[in-house]
Image 1 (tube, rainbow, N blue to C red):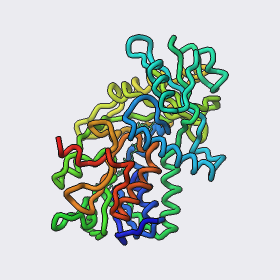
Image 2: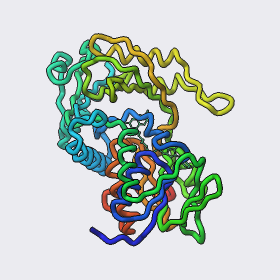
Image 3: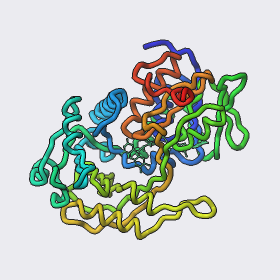
Length: 376
Ligand SMILES: Cc1cc2nc3c(=O)[nH]c(=O)nc-3n(C[C@H](O)[C@H](O)[C@H](O)COP(=O)(O)OP(=O)(O)OC[C@H]3O[C@@H](n4cnc5c(N)ncnc54)[C@H](O)[C@@H]3O)c2cc1C
């Protein structure tokens, strides 16, 4: 293993990126403190669809990173073959009728890069994956990606934090807003809202949707495309669905305990407003419509009931690609800001820990550097 050049690290943010990086650093023998404003997983990681995938079209480096991410989950799944929080039962997707239907192109592209994909007619779906109302599948058919899965991030984060603590890592929760401390042009640690200071050789900003505005305080720029997102968790029901469904009007996945997790961009756009005090106001009629859309794509069209609703920013960089690694102009200051953080969580933690601990660049992160925005 390449030698560490640091002894200590502090991480702001106990979502999947912060916790995964903290655990990988602790495994390397680095003395790590993770600071969070509230309890762990109270940000995007606590309200994520967390479909593990590299479906459809994107840059090749991003695809390779996602595939490596899925690979790490596969390894984890062999340690927990009966886990109710990590499943590889595939993903099924179809598009709306009309011009925007990209099923043919997506299937051809996925096949060309060796991504496991099967183009099915509506009638074939029931022989491949259960629980889908095939009448809702459009005329160009659906793609089944058998290598995909889903994870329950709060469960994973808690599990990682147990190992982190056993390795001597420190978790500081419910501390309000922390910030990165910079002295003489170098990141030297983090300060909490109560005035406590934690010195460290390297610092990671992993505050999910808050990364762009926090990094701006140091003069750096990260382009931000973060929307408000809405995730509905249903009450448990008995239903045969196994795959993650990505359909024109709704995405649905099984969740631990027989629940379903459900989201759609239109529901967040139409159903969430910001109130006068800055809090989110949810339109229950939109939530009902979202559940109806979910019921429509499920075999037997079951009645779905809301158990909980998660609302907040879904971290998405302005150019859609992950933002990972050190700030060129502030030694010791690292960032993690990306969509698809469920798929990327394990691999990004591993690679960022490598970079922070050794000071070396990892080639898989070379196109994801934060400085690409300062160059614009
Ligand atoms: C609705 C939805 C659907 C999604 N679907 C998928 C999907 O299907 N597949 C996929 O791979 N990904 C998906 N994602 C994306 C994925 O969930 C995120 O990329 C990932 O959870 C981000 O993790 P994070 O650690 O960067 O941020 P977060 O989980 O937001 O963690 C950041 C933490 O930092 C804390 N914090 C913020 N500011 C401060 C501060 N100043 N001081 C201290 N603590 C602070 C926050 O409270 C939070 O706990 C989805 C996300 C959403 C919201």
